[in-house]
Amino acid sequence: MIQPMRTITAHTTRSIIPMMAGLVLLASCGGGETTVATQAPPPTIEMKDFFKNPEKASFQISPNGEYMSYRAPWKNRMNIFVKKMGEAEAVQVTTDTVRDIGGYFWKGDRLVYTRCERR
Image (cartoon, rainbow, N blue to C red; front, side):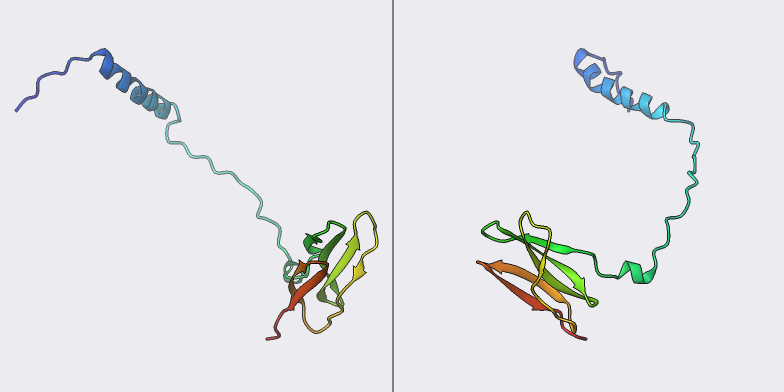
């Protein structure tokens, strides 16, 4: 069965115009040409550098706001250091040479920490 022609009204042109604009945009995108960007491969990172301990990590501020703490390597193990705000010198709080300090948090004016398990 043949369908009768549809009359275009103001209502149908409002819905057709955005669709036509999209087709025009697609048509102006190019003729299917592809460009391949030639980039140098990313630099290689040495394995020892990739897995080494960071210089400083896990920064926290004490509950009273007077001290800043962080983990840093000491004798190849991550230990906790604390410094008074505004001062340059930090005090080493832990001296573990067997295991890294895995994590820590402030509990009042004291630090609670965990040591990583040896495997």
